[in-house]
Image (cartoon, rainbow, N blue to C red; front, top):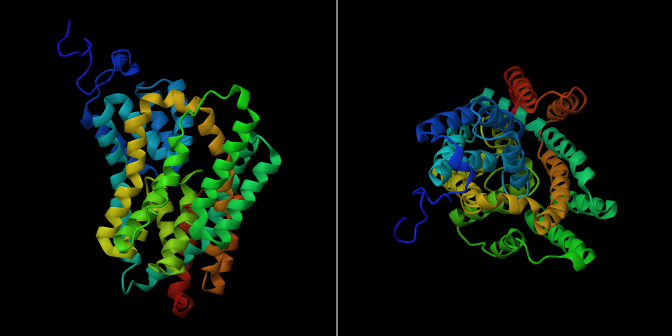
Length: 409
């Protein structure tokens, strides 16, 4: 018998004795730090690369998770707002050492890329960057609209297969695209509205079998938080980062239209060309694509703004896992969460596609359109990777800058 009402065999971190983690070896925190840090250093290529590396580590090489649990975790993370691959990395570490594992593993996954992108931000956003840096930024930035189109089209197939009603799916897609192309600063409200509309439609159609509210916080918490806009630069940075971390549905690239209007048009922290550079940096550096928000924070308020933006953008992912990982089975099967994502998901895909319009308008030099055309061919026809495409575009920009310096000014 154990004292103080604590069940016998309950670990000090609060893991229930019937938890699947009881059958796992006690993985040292140092091991989690090393392995998750390694993925954070070599994880070029965005979420697909992160998922592949995590599966190789946790399922195939170490056997810490079985294949079914890993697939279930992917599905549950895809139902949450925010960067799904980051949440998956935090969950896998949580699965091994609960709270401490999640904090150590998540930080080790995020920090390497953050250091790299902050160093590059200081270089690219400096007052007098070298000519070759201007050329690399202009070249890589010219390819960003093509990356947006590729990211959106790559998500359309699976979303189309999951659609409930074709006309509603198309309506959400068009609404997201139109909002991103025209009223980007209000895009988050459009995403939430599409999610709520689909949730309402499905609940109304299925009312006789509806079991209750399920997990309404997934829908209502962001709506309440949407009123938390404050004044001042740091508060504005915090709001933009919060939208990125807690109100983005549909994959990492949906953060681009969420940030663009705020950073360029509303707060004027960056020029259109600098924002293109920020997006390119987020794509070619390892670790989470959400790191792009650190560049926006750096442009707004220097290193303090960058660190604040990063902390706020990633905090919701830690909170979702620390507070809800033990309920992943319920989240995955929750009808309300799935219904909300059935509306917000297509709208997010449309927003990604629609973001190509203002991103293209930000191009300042005729030669950049040729680079954009080449990037579209590489990504859509030849199906080359995003990192390779951006590096080729950046190299093209360097050549242009060094041979015709006036072409980048």
